[in-house]
Image 1 (cartoon, helix red, strand yellow):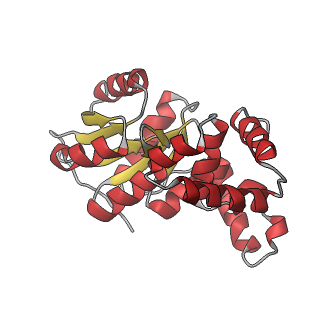
Image 2: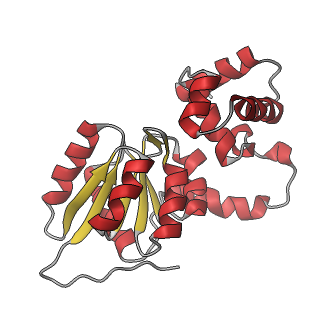
Image 3: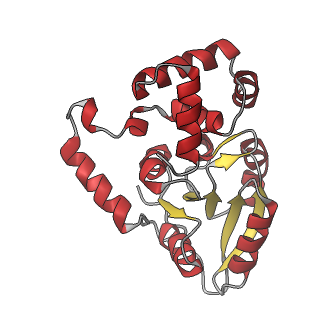
Length: 226
């Protein structure tokens, strides 16, 4: 579904930035404001702050990171899609696109860019989603095409982390950050018992025997050792 927002030659497309690092937002804002056709209209570091400000800011596109203060960008993407469906969404993150891009698209994003991409690529991605088109790397596009052929295949053919639900992956990521069950529960507004249940499901899906094995695997995955 296209979300193209038209602008006249004398107006600039409005960009709302969501990232938990102020220095990243500042650098991206400077880059965007140097463009002839783009301008930042607001920024936030958490889902709660985003939902409070984005309506008034009235952006044409929101650029979201995945890891945010008090939540995650995938769930925030869903919230924006539900409450402000005319805002195009671009995910810009350090997290592996092979693992997160498809989840972001299912949540309503129009594109996914790694933070390691050149500045020109990031600007091209913003403009492409503004025009109502999808923006994905060649690797992700090829992976999505392969997934059609894998539909209905045995779960053993699916990479381990892709077996996790979005919530399970979110908790797995927080485990890799060394966060306790109580800390995860508070951050996600869940009960500790619910987090423990998710941990058990994660261990089963990843074929891990203990919580220590899960912690080790989560840390290795976060460090790029998966």
